[in-house]
Amino acid sequence: MNRLKLGGVAGRHDIPNINGYVLDKVDDPADIGKINSDVKESLDKLNLSSGLDLYVTGLTSVTIAVIKYCFDNDVALTCYHFDMVSKTYLPQIVR
Image (tube, rainbow, N blue to C red; front, side):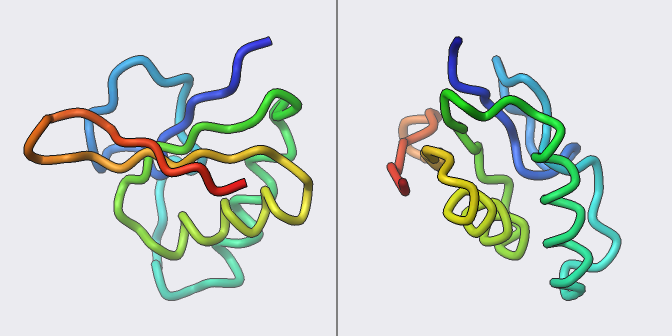
């Protein structure tokens, strides 16, 4: 099975060739408890046995919640960051 490719939050950036988003929306970026809960609920539904490629969409609180989830659940994680110069996503292996 291939690694799942997800963006952080829907509607923030146009990301080609991904499987979906971790969250559809975030009402309050400062409500860390809700974000952690929503990320866990979302990722618990997915098969992450081959790992996760997360395309970072800018909400740091969501990115950190995904990193925490992956560490807590032994999920291999690579974050991808958009490079304005090359117009490509650059990988950062996290776990």
